Length: 451
Image (tube, rainbow, N blue to C red; front, top):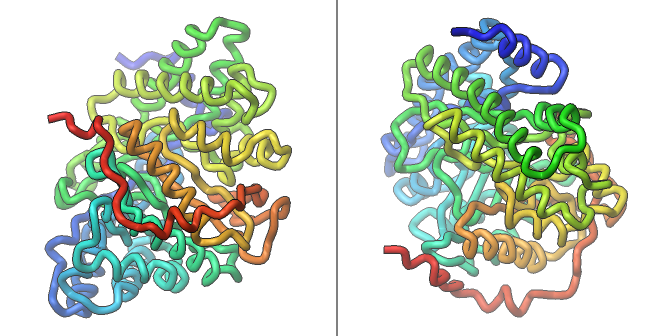
């Protein structure tokens, strides 16, 4: 039976506390688009996406109108394109252009999957795709790219880490005239998941169905509001409040995902219950941590507060849906979170503290603007550090750095929209070049031997 109080509470969350569905993402397999002729393969890719996702945006809009629930983004993820490159050969940028054209045709804001999975080595097509990423992201508008360089099971491919340091820097250089936006659409993973609906790291895993709908929810403002109303309760009650709030947010995501899947005639995959912030006032994960009791995000105690938040979100979400997946936790993208931006500007939040926070949160070093003269080796070393945290702790970690070409510490980069903007953060510039250039493979940890 519908409860009037619950209905009114949800309406208030939407109207006053920035509650929304951050994305409905259609995952599409491109394995049947493989062809030895790259032009034919690209044509098949465009045709399949245009057909499968033809009604995706319209469906999202209809659900918004029917239930009054904002759905901020409609997106697509596809099979890692490097798998097609290994069959067709040719320039991988042609695939990126086909993806971009299809995204424009169906009206989605991003399409993810210009990706490679190289945690144990490069198969045919992987190296070519990685080297093509800078040009692909410079010559397209809506394509997102990701590379998985490590896993708990396989260890870390240090050769790929070295390549990706150069790729991140070159991607920023080729889009320097657009505030280095290319690097904001590129993620380097350890333990990447196959059903992530969030960009820029979404791709459609080979273990997934041919076509599927995944949903990513939001709600930092709702959690902060609930804690504020509770006042000075003890920390166990803080965790209970977060759990109960996450339950409500996840139920809304379950409803939207179920309805969208039925309307589109495809299976419903998962709800990713991550708390995804925005630059909007009142929609910040950092502000939740401050409501828990920190003077400002980045203070000592931040990692502990984030651990409480992330764990409680997961516990509340899994009680609300049997289809929880993706990343599911709390995101800490600096430029996309109003509280994080303020903390970085004031100096309360540094990259070393962010790295510590990634050991207990959902993703990793996300949307961090670094000085424009940062070397490729330093970028690679940051990727290696973050991959090591993910590998050892059996969790997904990622790096999305934006070298601000031509800018130095203290200056700012602005993207606008959900990507936001923020200050160029200080990095330790002592050289890790000798370590990075050793190459080879970092062995998998002992905890990988679980059979």
